[in-house]
Amino acid sequence: MSGRDRIGGTLLAWAALGRRLGGSLRPAVVNGGPGALVLEADARLIAVWALEVTDDRITGISSIVNPDKLRHLGEVGNLTDLLHAARDRT
Image (cartoon, rainbow, N blue to C red):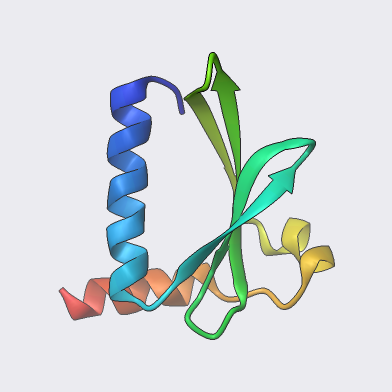
């Protein structure tokens, strides 16, 4: 994903969804740069975000949600179940 408006809008939508479901973000260094761990309400990992920054602005974001690629970081949640729960609450 790239572009200020697209990234900003997407981050705001994801943050709103996360708040509704009790999730949180934990700042982290990802591949040597800024990023975040995306956690369920029970602190299980559901995604890792890596931010691309140019001139002190976020210019891109990569999100890793594949549980097989996240397991080495800790207990992994089920993103599919979480998204279904969010859909059922609307």
